[in-house]
Length: 474
Image (cartoon, rainbow, N blue to C red; front, side):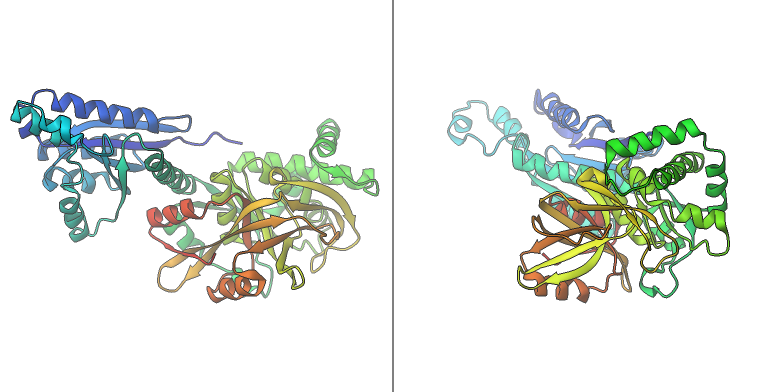
């Protein structure tokens, strides 16, 4: 897996230069707060560009140019005290990235009694101004709204846990957006004929998400299989035994065939520097390509677990959904409705092809036929870890181009269909009937991505940063 570009988060504190000569120590105090926020934002995978205090229109323009030179992905605008809106607009206009306004007081409230015992009224005013972050936010919001510049807000206390949960959510959402914008998606083969719901405009994918789309050839993958060494194949068979529960009825011939394809897939993905992929190809009439496509499942499952999600049936939108869930550390496995269990009031969901083995324990089973597809071979059967889960669908929307459709539920224990496919039992607060009706009413394609944990709120933030729609049904 290639190393991902770190998120570059711009941070500035805004203030008013007229105050610095009037109130001793105020500027230094506010700079200390900005430094504290910078230290909490920075971590592996996140580089903070600290622009310092922006307190004049001239400094605002300079900071805007600095933001562009530093190639920031998101701007955290920390309102430390009252500031004029003309110290904000030039910066935000030139930065040209999503803006999160931090309206943070240093403490939950001023100690009124201690404040009123201060003998120096100038010192009193200076102390109050350090708590005055809420004052200019309406002014800033007014100007940004009139300039048609989207902005988002976090209001709270500097050291409060609730505040930082909210900030962490925006940081995760910004990382997700940046991940998609720097990603390379490989498209191999063609759509599954007749599935009109999954067909999409890949130009619009690049416009909205920033994702590069690379058309890649099945023939190249088949050629790479032909040059895979026996030693590499043997090592990959050993990997299969470690990563999967390989069932006794899986033949050594089929394991070697799948291992050869997996080795070739790794080389294929590396050559094209792919971060995600969607594929479907029948291979009928070409023995080499049919052999490739009928032995691809284990290799694509390993790639998915290594943060290179692979969606079958050429499902471009679901490859994006899987990548989003993976970027949030939730996994992201290919899934669709399998059946409904009205006795237990739950929905069975799964899919053939790749599974995300990092979020489930997976068995490998041989199949004599791939239902609705050409060939036979090994397949992955798994059930997502029991506990909270989130479903995500990237939906084409007539008004907003795309929207994120989300549902939070729970993966629960119980019997599954032992047919060599990924499948799990999911329970939703709306009940099985209510969930299915609400989900379908949003017009999604029939595939979605499932991940572990509840991450709807971060996905909502990500949709806002990307300027697309968001709908959560439960």
